[in-house]
Image 1 (cartoon, rainbow, N blue to C red):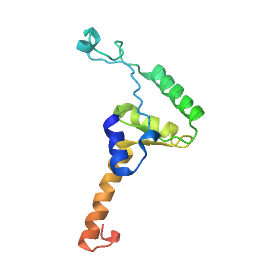
Image 2: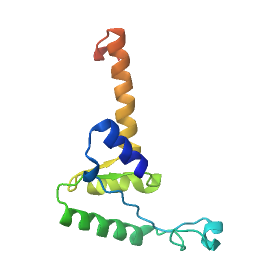
Image 3: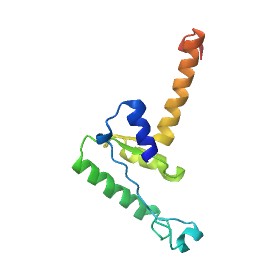
Image 4: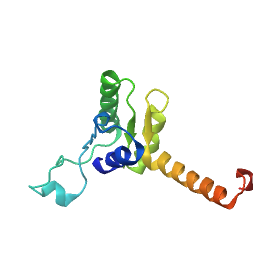
Length: 125
């Protein structure tokens, strides 16, 4: 999460003291990491289902309580959970899923830039 935040601060103009990187470590299903004594992550099988969503809910509730106007960016959530989480929180929390919405926004900006460079209107699509 540090790399993306650095980009937002350097290129996006967001003040560095206004960002807080957070990693939700929900375990791993990698058998080698589960046995690796030097692995720094949670050495338990990855949470899933109800337990997983309860953990995310606890986090989102805590963020909302402490910083009610904070933007939470979901980054690198597994594809089977990413859309569910976005659908769950998009109407009650200021949140953004980079893998879903960021990709779409980047693609759209590329198309609009190309149209502008060609001197064409959006209706040309």
